[in-house]
Image (cartoon, rainbow, N blue to C red; front, side, top):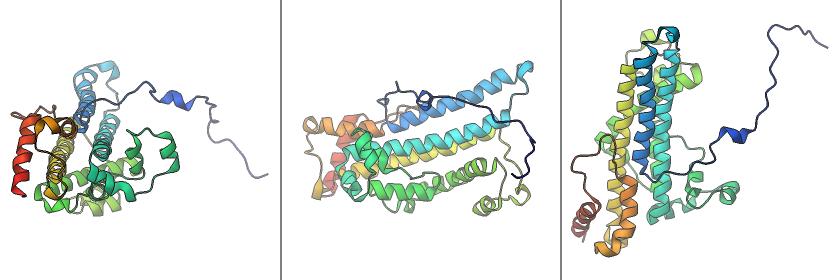
Length: 289
């Protein structure tokens, strides 16, 4: 038997049931993906407000680990962005025939086919997919929604590049506990970071606000772009989805409208109602004849 001498405390025995870690009473909210995104983001923002207004002014807990809280909030922002894209793709695959047919070539794990309900099944297609940088977002939109060359749009490219910087901060937090490594330095070479190598991320509420704006802009601009692409595609004459009689099309069109409508952040002033959007699409469809 080899050398054995205690140099630290012994491990503690722990017992639990893993299913108690999950909220089995949860049911999917009947909101659009973008509204769900802003609801989750608002919850993260409340943590910042709570720290700035309550913790800071309370001397007994002035040692609250603010840097850790800020780091976790940044990770939360990134998680919410990924959740938005997953939900959007899943819901579109369920209602959009073109997207559904485009996904037929993808393999699905047997376990997913057996366990998932029909409403959740497209989520299984996204297993193993990450939305943690601009390239992966573009790949997923191409693979599952057949939307290509998205960064030919200069506005999308610009907002995605800013988001990519935040993705690098996320990578630093997850894999290096906040310190800037060489790989991340190389990926962030457009910034002046020579003196930051092996230095820890130092966030505060102002910096987090700027990060949240980058994430919000990404979701807002992509939501608009994807809605234009998907709706415009349904109006193409060769496989037009609509009769152009709102009474006949209303039920089906409402499914698209409810996926993309935004009632948060705050709601767009003069946002078109469902009939107005349908009528605009009908006018667009006539230009394609």
